[in-house]
Length: 469
Image (cartoon, rainbow, N blue to C red; front, side, top):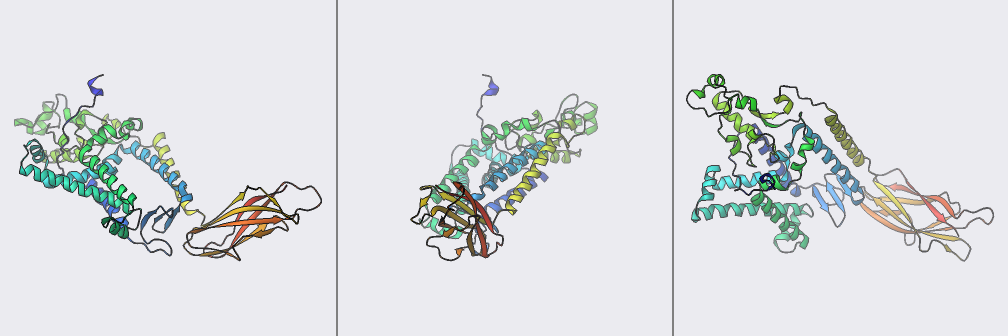
């Protein structure tokens, strides 16, 4: 086995802080994502019926509430459409811009960024952290390292607890959690997610991206020579005689060009800011998450030197070779169309969902009963699902089975269903078959459910069968 096939352990990456446009974008996305995750469970949303929490996964009631949208258990196909949309959108974006999802939106990236921010505030920037790491254990090191891990554990616990709050009323569940009255599932969820967050963001960090994440393994299948990725312009940076530090006369750009040297001054800043510890000058690598922090680092150096930015930039292989980047290709157009179709299909599914559902299941044990007067009885289990946020009243009738009588057991009069609720009814249909003529053993007829009160006005019709001897 070659050395390249062996995972070589190394000390934890200690990235240097950097300022720039891409770091600003990453910080903005981080703040927005954290605000959404940690604040949403606490926001209230007034509903005519149901919980008043803005976002809630109500497992006992099998409901998912988000604003005015209510997802029921039978709407699971929404989730299928959403997952398909997420997949094709990821493929589409990756084909165009590489692993920008990893660099800006991935949960691992967001939490590691927050953990490293805490670490830098307590232990200092890169040089100070490396010095502290190599320092013998003393009071200062115990205080700084212990304080760092204490805050990491606190953020991990806050993460786990917040996730649990999406599955119950946030205010009530929090009070129960800290008084020992919360369900066991809430404690299990919070502490398991706390442990996994702490392990992944505090200890594993870049190892998740380098050795565990499957996305990095199939990125090469999705990239091509027109994909915009974070790249080092080797021709400009190396020149004909290679990169060299700006010493003596080589501080002047014209002198460097005359001697065949490139614009890269070999400062190593791009390597120091990389969260996975790679050298972007070595070309595209599986560990690169396209966070573009190396672009900020290099641009800051170019600004200090008074040279043109863009030695490291988002660009394509074609552009680096002097050709034009082609965005409109069969693959990108195909992914784009698939993304639009998946979005349209999901919107259509949500907007066209029936607010009234009627299901009929024939009871087949026994299949039929012959009564003393010669009539035949079939039994049916009927379920009415009122998805609206207001009570409704319905009338159930038979059509296509002349002379048949419908009995709803204990239900007398019209059927009343509470808001966002279901009603199960055991129905019996008695039918006297004609005495003459050919009689089919299977008579088709329909149940018609007519709304009398409520938001839904259109009747619901379900075809069923009446079994004869």
